[in-house]
Length: 342
Image (cartoon, rainbow, N blue to C red; front, side, top):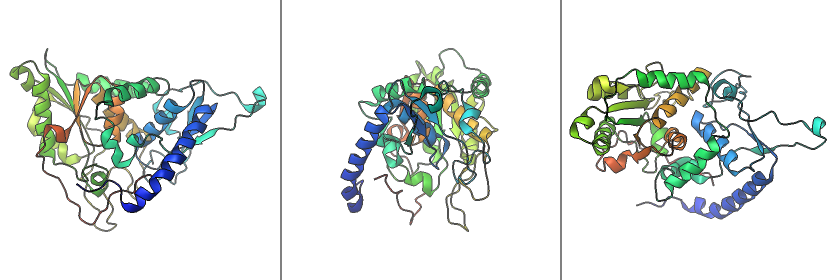
């Protein structure tokens, strides 16, 4: 196979590692940590906050700074001045005491990136895999309990979605996260391509059979579909009928490339189309649904990393491990791999 790093990236790697270790040392001793947004999707920011909470000192106050400027391209869940974190989560910590009140300087340590490379770019494909994946998920899950308390509306929506489909005794609850296919999502995969929808359906059936105690239980499996791909909904409905759980109100798109801008088509990051906090809530609910499953099928995605952290005991299986001969959805020639964070 090809090398993961090109020559220039390999030259920069030692300095990037050294710089990262210095940042970790500063973060570990800070009494107050402010986590800024990165202009990516919702769960890129969720993971950035969580990573900071994990590496910060136990007594440190970690403050997500998710107030929008109005200039965001991808993390555009509202208008200027909206606090996305406050709209989705309960307050994580008591308000930190001010310098004037304590007489102590409270100049914060600013976090602008994720420290763990397994939460970034194409490296994400390894977070849920490997011999240390289970302990890694539990470590982050323990940290998440100290920073993320989803709002009542998100928890209620999750519960209502799960209750919408009858689940027979012994029937497994199988989740699947199907990202829309475009050059952006494809180039974030370690394999550099997304697999087709049919492969995800095969993967769900294979996983259901593996989890079920009998063929009848496998056929009765309830399937939770979390997707931003509008075409996937019809395909999964045809495959699983009344056993399919999905939230029709969530925004989806067709994927591919905009013929004029030549940019990938996604729900977020589209020119002139700002989203709302409700759209971010839909993304959060999808992850909560996946985390509620006995097992879920995934590709390389921040959403499924988050779901695997929310419930470190649910089985997370990569679609390619279940369907090794999966066909690619789109090839997208001419689009290069995303620049690595080094």
